[in-house]
Length: 343
Image (cartoon, rainbow, N blue to C red; front, side):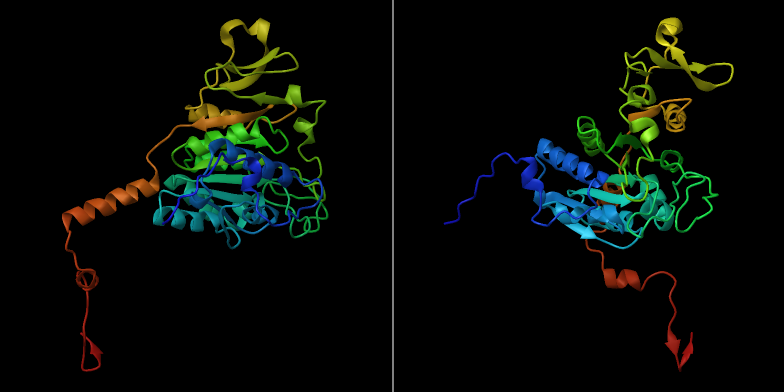
């Protein structure tokens, strides 16, 4: 007689694999892994229905450290592999883990098309503005002037904005978080998981060896309150030690500006995460003129790709329940070979 075992409530430790976690001491990836394990526990995610897919880079080790299914794929192709997994089994919960070099350089094409197709998966971009695994070359998101083994005189490239790219490609969900903010990051990850369609989450992650404190201008404790605006849908966008500053839209110049809350009166900008234009404006904000917008910048669900594919398949099967695949392959425009010649 078979007896079904009862699984109790899972804790964060239950989602940790038996593999030794091997990143550089102090790497921001440790904090992200901890937040992910907490998120999975909060969701009581089924390990047998959860899949992590990664490409190449420091972030790509992620699947080894979680007690779920995982695929460590090839450079830049994780979104393509994840799309195949989701199409094959739409019931699986698929997470993609990638870095700024992996996703935005060699993998840029796959990223764009995953976003525009709106495949129902969570795509996490660990952005440290450098190639960490290959010893510190500049990446597509590196700031102009970045000195590295591949740019000893300083990078001349204009850095790529992950947020601008995602929104421009048609992403229906875009959020931002900081690796070490353990009280906020799991909340962002849970919002991404709840979204139906591609959820794109950019996580500012510190590379302590090759690009230490590159985000210090808005993450260091001394400046965080003044240079971080944590967004809440339907709430005025405020920041500062006591929330004394806010944002408003200058109607004459059609641009955002920082305003004193008391002086602004009722003119403070209220966050609307369904407004794509507003999300683009928020994604473009940079210190010291503006705070960095964190949280969910944009969320406007639309039908997911794999569900539409499944609907098409079901409709085709209903229309032709006895269809012959062999006959289909030989239908339409074909040609035959006679006497050794094409005919």
